[in-house]
Amino acid sequence: MLASSHSQPQPNPIGFLPRTNFDDGPANRVVHADFSRDARLLDASIAGVVLSVNPRDDEMREKATRAWNFIRTMLADHLVDDADADLPWHGDTSIGSPTACDILRKRYSELRALARTLESTSFEHGTDSEVSAAGKALCRLAVKLDDLSERTQRRLVNKLRQYVFAAAKERSLAA
Image (tube, rainbow, N blue to C red; front, side, top):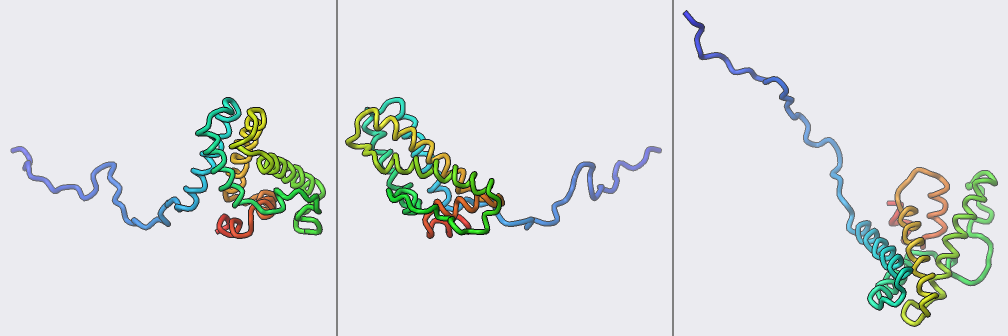
């Protein structure tokens, strides 16, 4: 006679792997402050691109003004000051080689030139050519600050972040 149609169920069907640990690590959550900063930098870069092509756009001029005011609060004062003082890391021995110092100086100088361009231009009252140039500078600065604000293990990037961002912003970025 045929074997019984009633058989024992298999405890682990083929391809089934039971979950044993639901707490594999911390949840991947976006911090509201990071999201807000990233969104504002994105708005700044968009406003900058639009103004570089169409400097007569009043709505983008207003957005660029708000974006620059936000970015300005992030930056250290010496980045936009007119005084040509010593570089902020003058005498800092933790930078390392002269090559590293040159790279740091070049990147810092570029950020400082962009910030000074924006500081000297009025998006509300500037001429079309001034607003177009400031729009390009705003876009470039926003992208560079976004790259700089990302957490990294690279020593020079961390040093540059330390000298570019205001002290309170640096502490929040390092956390």
